[in-house]
Image 1 (cartoon, rainbow, N blue to C red):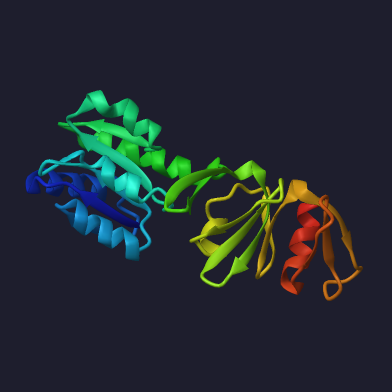
Image 2: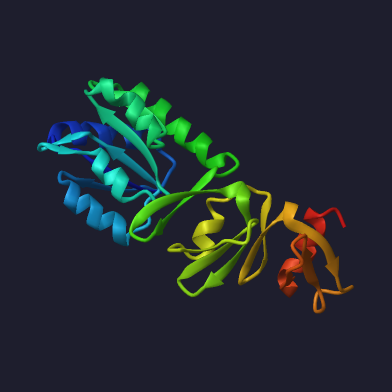
Amino acid sequence: MNLIVVEDEYMVAKRLMRFIQLALPMQKLNLVHFTRLDDANDYLASHAVDLLFLDLNLQGQDGFELLKQQLSKSFHTIVVSANTDRAIEAFELGVVDFIAKPFSADRIATALQRVQSRIQQVGCEYLCYRHIGKMELLRVADINYIKAAGHYSEIICKNGQHILHDKNLDRLLTLLPPDYIRIHRSYVVAISSISNISGSSASQCQLELHCGTRLPVGRTRYHQLKQRLGG
């Protein structure tokens, strides 16, 4: 599990990291600490992170700026701050928990349990994507299917809109609820979009969607797909 702590007070960060390790004794942790927002932002841009612990007042900088710059990333966030008046703002930005300073080991353990519960839930309701320099939100329920596009993914919506997303298909699949299924190395489909399956064997199988689009089914995905559709 890859975690980062963004906290400019060394002793607070040290205490927090110790409590994290106590709460997750069986987990293999890669725990990294930053005191500056710029350093944390650079790290997040080039590393896959599962969980961020974030202070809000970092040498005069606002910790929320980090979240706003990293909206399209898939990590979870726990805010640890004395600025409890900003809790509502934190939850509006999608954080899992807001921990007031000073904090206890039990409080950190409770927050980590919430994160693990969130990870096991049905996936996110919205995806963030960049459009003409701005971050936009897309309802996951509006996705028809997704096609691999190199290091990116092309999202085809039920209204016909095409969106290029900066995450590859593997990364996007980890964010989607279980009613989105991979049918081929290049395609993920909403089960609700499937009209019928043609072909009687794995080598001949194709999906037809309600919109009329036909998509190939990979040989290794055929039996899993049939099971999911009750066939």
